[in-house]
Length: 377
Image 1 (cartoon, rainbow, N blue to C red):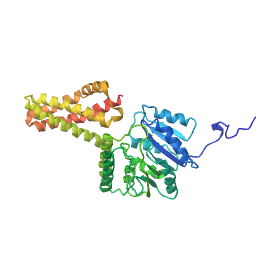
Image 2 (image 1 turned 45 degrees about the horizontal axis):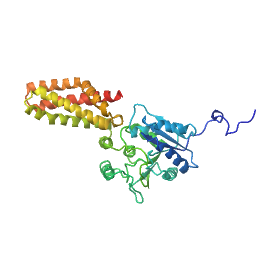
Image 3 (image 1 turned 90 degrees about the vertical axis):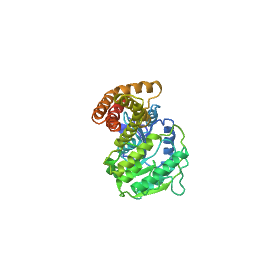
């Protein structure tokens, strides 16, 4: 029998391999065209490093996961986790980082806006003893020119200032999505991190409470190559919720705060509709019903646009979804009107009675109707 050489032997006969030194975790949604480009760039810049790239895909409809696995079939350094029924950049990063066996873990975007040539320098800093290396757009020689609009640039700067002043963060760019961390330090912090939102680095740094040895490196934030930016209204709400969660020392979860924000808006809509409905000579119970129906419409719009934007209903599905949403919230509407009418019968103060009913309806709509509605998809 001929001897099997390493080039021709089946993988099972080659024996176990050691874990890579570096795992590059890349959260993705709708990044199919960027996957092969990023992998090729990593092959070039990480030559001589024992590395792997782990794509964590939120079930992209464009076949992002399939594109990664097709390359991984011939290159074992390319791995993919396809998440079903789970969404969010922070959660994807945490899941990918926990799946790594590497000594060091980098997180970067798939859109090619992060300069992969900075990875060797980050790795060198961690080899020298740093716990966390952060790529900063706001150090000298860095640039945030790749932000797609002036509005995004202002939002990034404002978020940075808020984080520094309210949370005591000293990083020049706590909003950066490009960093590298020692796996053992991440493992220590992971149980206290939020899986919601977009700003995993800010969460890491605040949760660590100054115990990380951090270095910052300047980088130029490039232009997106393919696909669309994921930063929108939801990202703003996520950041606000994370900020409040950290200000309360994680006693209140960011997801709960998001639902509370929607509930406040829904209640405001209800209370704004009630006075003109009463002025139109409608009975209190009828006016309360009209206000509840319109508030539910607002709730549906906000959940569809912001909370569940990645599963957003459009066109005819939006219309049928709104009808179904109203039907599923019918019990909440009934409870809303019943409670409000009971309070109004005892004390004919429309705003007290209306508010009591609106709060009952808001809780039902946000915590029951919305969750059931979008989970069915």
